[in-house]
Image (cartoon, rainbow, N blue to C red; front, side, top):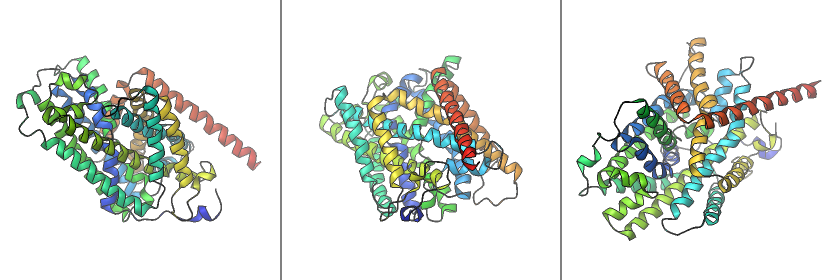
Length: 447
């Protein structure tokens, strides 16, 4: 474990319920719904796209109950790293899962941040024509800006998060209310198109749901910040369910509003669908203002996601499961600055290398098996092995929420395609090899 004065300072429990919820919600929104909306509508061939948003919300609730129970029980920095360790650590092979999660996080966390930065630069082209190289430069600059914004104490971050959420929430509410007077009820609820219960329909639903789930991701961010939440046994579950409910309502209203104003084929073909929506209702100038607000939302999401992910390598290093330098905490500002800089540095590189569509699918597929499914399975096993253990929050109708989340995650995994499934399995296999190399080296040191 790391040593020195910068390592011994604990993180501060300074985030209130309001601040934790704001961080969750700005993480969930981001650029996601604005860049995936067109794909979801196109995949579902019209208003049937609502099913993908509903399935995404249902999964967030079911899986959210898993996270809420674990987060309330073990409110520490690191989220899934801590949960997998507590659930499986006593088993012979149990130490491998937390290691695999940290290994995946070093790849997928920068990918998440990079996806937001890439989406930001792509949407910026509505305002300013940019070459491919210029877009990459903007993506990299956005990652640097977000890291600089996070280089402060957690109290300041909590206050800033509330401001960013006010911008995010008010923009989406403005979007929904703008449909008044321009809304075509028949057009918005014409389910004749695309609603054919065939095998192709379920393939389309799986692909659309994968993109919708990307837009909901972040409902668990508060668990990564467990060591910095006030009254975590109560506030972690509350902030998650408030976040999921609020965002689900906003997404559904936004999707219905856009469908009622623009024909679905125009939505599916538009790379800047929300800007086009405002341009149709008002004019180009108003659409430009709305685009600036969307970009502010994208930056806010990057801010929240980077904040949460930076705590995972820190938590693993504190426990001796990752490089000791990641356990260092800034002497004056009391945050894991080495972890933040490392995650941000990789995100910067990834933002220069990849395309948005590939990144979104890779992010979801990579995380399903080790993080989401094994976490839910571990919760079920924990209940059976220790039924009388104290649980500050216990999911209703146990074990059905966990079981349903596993089924839906498997459906989305299969829908992602064998190319991405192979990549995910390959990364897991590499992690297994690295784990045994690490364990063998540790035994040699002991001998």
